[in-house]
Image (cartoon, rainbow, N blue to C red):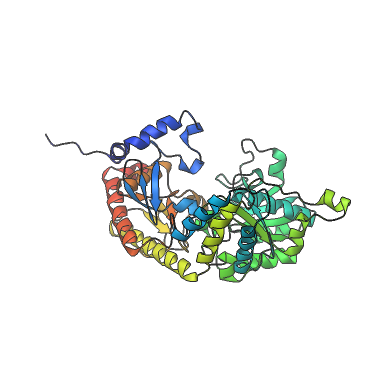
Length: 459
């Protein structure tokens, strides 16, 4: 009798017994056993022991080419020697002084050098805090209460960021979010500048906030010229423009998307790369807007100023990592390499799909990629794709069905590749050999999925 071959899920379970045991323990401590929603994975997520460069090793000793890259924070890869050294030096000096320090000055100056629109800077502990502060500043500065955002764009988990982030984009309720908050946020249809222009003309919008890559780090790309026209519309109506560069900042170019395209937003939110892989974020912007955070010898002013405490704002450890990181990513060769590796990967994966007649496409820009299996786009010819044609924004946002996404994730992990949220982000540490191995792994994974009948099930 022929020996039965393991399914993709059975192999995943067989290769990761220690991760499964860790997860069963975690279920006693955390809701659904995870500490970040995106790490929820069926039948259980991986537990990692160590990481270096573009690779990491799980608790069962399996080596993985990593495309999670610290949720996008690690443009330099895991455990970069200069960042490790900077953190080691600082941790012996202290992690929290409860006072100002030289590293916070250097950190802010490096941001201002790379992003001239950030005339002044205020640090936060996360990207979510950064977008919350930027929105508050915009409302205080303009005297208007409403914020306009675009359907599908992600700005963290704070209340004002959630409307329109996930399909259905026009949902009228969100668990735990007051209706009054929802009514203060206007959600523009995907990439609809005509709607924006009409809505801003009403004069009650304090700011427009968006990911300047398009929703979810270029999952729903922006048309050419979109940002320049948006800048013109906001200037004409006296509306502030906030670039949420939590992911794109220092990744799309040393100066982010604004540096790449020469656009000057009024406010910029940052996190991830800005703190070199440690917790940290920032808001930067026009000096007159940031002045709302100032203390003055005027009691009336101080009652109206925008308050911003925060125990871990600019903590010395994050500042040390951030200074070391920004010094390195100021070299555009870093972004050029990561971009080239991502383009090689997107092209190679698309060729696999076309060669084997498997429905799907891979797209992205800069150093990111997204995968949609079970769908087709009219410009899938086995080459790189920035903007898939003939595909709905909902498909671009969600990528693929939960069943296909789970199975692809398991199949790729079995092959030694860790994807992130149906795609991934690259670093300067990824090599051509890593990319070629990933393409080969992808080919084996999707062929195995086809053999198990997953594409027929998805239709």
